[in-house]
Length: 140
Length: 140
DNA sequence: CAGTATCCACCGCGATACTG
DNA sequence: CAGTATCGCGGTGGATACTG
Image (tube, rainbow over all chains, first blue to last red; front, top):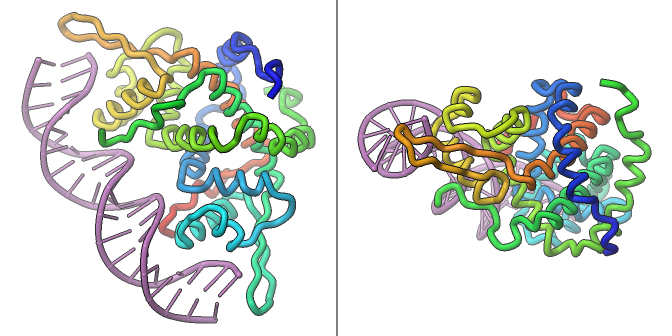
């Protein structure tokens, strides 16, 4: 990657300092729950890898496509796809065929989320967090 | 808030479509875990509310400050603060006094994360997700 | 004040087996 | 093929009580 694609850390921090004011404008209390919930969903097993798979792929993916690539149990994959669909991040289309065929695709909302991930990657690179430590386990 | 502060949804989507290429540049496989872990931590109880409290506040906060404002059990707050500190998002400074005093402050890394939240709020507003539904519970 | 220790209920997740 | 049903384990978090 070309280094000057990264944001200037100082600028990032400065921009961060205006976070408080922006939040007021957006109505913090109402949406705070919302964002927490989003992180909860996206923090669940395979949510991000699934979304990432769609971002790497042109066109729809089927249940078995994902199952093959991610080494995830059908139980968990089923739940995750349902949640992501219900949350408006994926669409689900099933065809009345034998054998049955179901196709999933990311919504515009999911694609619109991509800049967030880009920022996250930039941030992770700039501050070099989690390189070694991972997330501390709650029961340590 | 002034409406033209929002990104043009089309531009956001278009930018999102280049996500795949950016990921390649950043070395996707290595950092994918990292970002998943970050979401896991931030999805835990009171992680975002705690961070938000710091972003709303000038200067440090003490354990009881947070306890008073968030209605969180000391057990959970203790764990969350430890994790956020270990993850490099908060600093912890304890003074040898009686009664003991401990102050927490967000790091530059935490402040640098703010643009991500801003993006998230913009995104949530544009796509109006989770307005009614919340995160589907896994056991429904 | 700033936590920790203990106990416990619930939830998330995988393995396995089964179905339309 | 695209799931669901069931089971079991471990992780997560609250209540309560206690400590340096």
